[in-house]
Length: 96
Image (cartoon, rainbow, N blue to C red; front, side, top):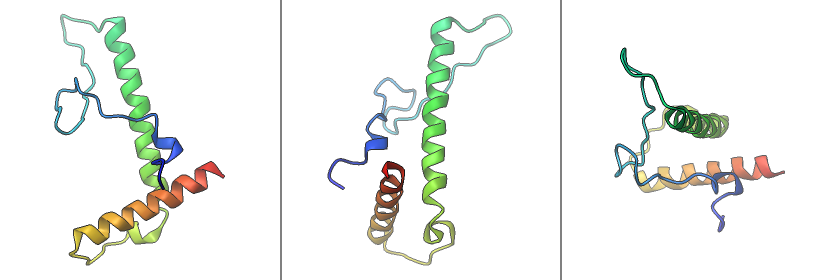
């Protein structure tokens, strides 16, 4: 798939995330003496919607039993290709 999948185009790794090498973002937490600002609430909402999209994509790909069952494949490159094929099939399923 040359375009990377239409459904994944909106996702990108954030450079300002707390863990920049991994592109992870953590939600803001309120403390006893500090409530969240509107900007922090909006950030948490956007982060939650991104996580939901990722979790739905992963659960969709797990419908292919080869990803749900334990594999005794020791070649990581082959497993990466297998995951890419399942992601491509799932993206094709969503677009049609």
